[in-house]
Image 1: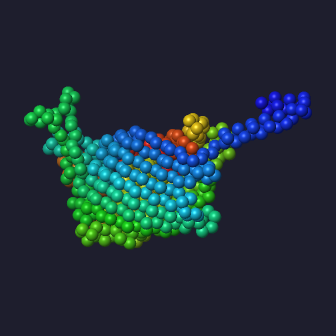
Image 2 (image 1 turned 135 degrees about the vertical axis):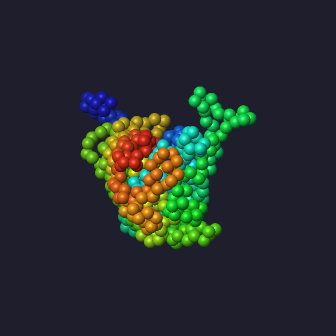
Length: 488
């Protein structure tokens, strides 16, 4: 089109005005094609996912974005996230509602959320990661009836309900440097597994019937669990196992030079803050456990100058450290990973999708942990569909970390001078009775894998990742994480 208009203009000056008008119209069309979103944008998907820990997930989740006049794009003016889902294996139910904005209050960021989770078959894997010796064959297994006196075993099971209300704020000190402060309320109810039973089939594939001809239900043995073994060994008290409340406050600094938030192409995102609970305990049993944690995170995003039509590759890495400085974290709070801005609904557990991929949820329970995440983010293709902008990317990654402060180390040392703790119940199954070996607590934990991302308007990012942990005794095979957003 440009060439044709140029020829006409060259042949006749009389057509020059027409040529100029056509060129301006063409430039305006190109401007309209520039990736800018205005107004509202909605992303709603069924939560048809699967994970090793929880099984299939059914429900809905999504994000609602408001971009206003488009001047803040790709960052939204307002973002609302929500989820309602149920997991078929763990019977977990999650309800979540969150709000995030840097524009609701001038020069201040507001991040707030309400979360309610029920975990009738929540998994407890022991303390201090590699020190806890695991046998995954006795996790969620209802087929041990012939091996142990008619008992079905979920050795790593317990019950847990959680209510969380968060409100975090950030305000500018100077460009790119913010103060941060917030208050978080937690309520936990712990107890034995809430097992509704399951129907089992015989060797011919027929459901097993009771004397009245009804399907017979099989239940887990609530006393044959690792939690009970820890309690019998003196590592957990009755107060630990009833749950409680925690009112946390946090304060610190945030340095942020990212070009965007959901998937930065360049910049640094660093946080350093204290997170403490002036009150943590259970009024019903008189427990009182105040604590103070230090949290330091440094993330950098580096564009690699390799021309790919969908966008330059990005090398991203995170250095992280979290540790209790004063007091002792209550048992019901030890899995929490404090964050100023929630990128995923649940921010807990060393292991799974939040920290070190390739392991089961909350596989490492410790007072201190240092870890690193590295990944290469490569956009393969970008396209426009239904007036929305999409891209597909891959992200090979490597994760690694180690425990910097063990949980309940003094009690463990008192219980077993050799650092080993045994469970006589496991001997009934012919299993190795060793459930804790302190000499393994200092092992380096590392994993690698790759992910696939589908992003809409650079903010709503569907993520699927596979990882393999290479530290002996720590791997969850297979480990698959399906959700939203990059990990960091």
